[in-house]
Length: 200
Image (cartoon, rainbow, N blue to C red; front, side):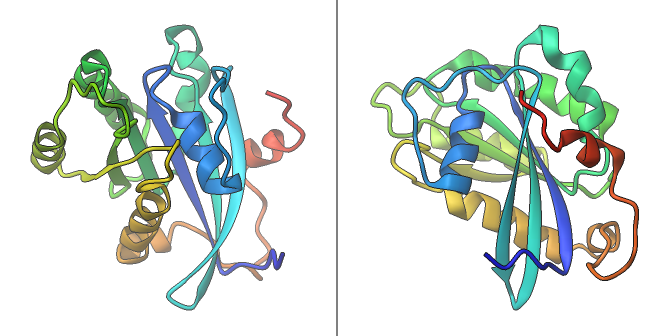
């Protein structure tokens, strides 16, 4: 695979434990699904290369643990993120009710004022839904977030979710300027250097 790129975008995936954040990332990066996906411990990291609008992009994707005991570990990973994907499980009302908590985390730790927020209603393939699409859309609209329903199991909406975030970043000059085009000699962010070889 050609690993050259013009821009590096950092995307963060947040939300309660068990909503399917790791499954979304696994489906997007490797087109795989694991019914017995283990809970993330701390933070997981993947990269994905995309070509969008004639531009070569590298996405640094950070999958954060939802459990409370790991939240102090993950706060620093908000730094520099151009896009934040906030997930809930539409078959579990409590995870939707906790979206406000995650919004507060974004406000507290995000360093990009214009960071793109995408609200993702995952597990839309399940028959017993506790949160309607309309509820999700209304909440996203009233909080200036994009919205999409996804299913990591069936692939529904997964690629589209990431593409729409990337398109929006590309349409936001302050976010494009916050990443360094390839070719310039810049020091890699320490958090990305640290992530190499991370076995978590």
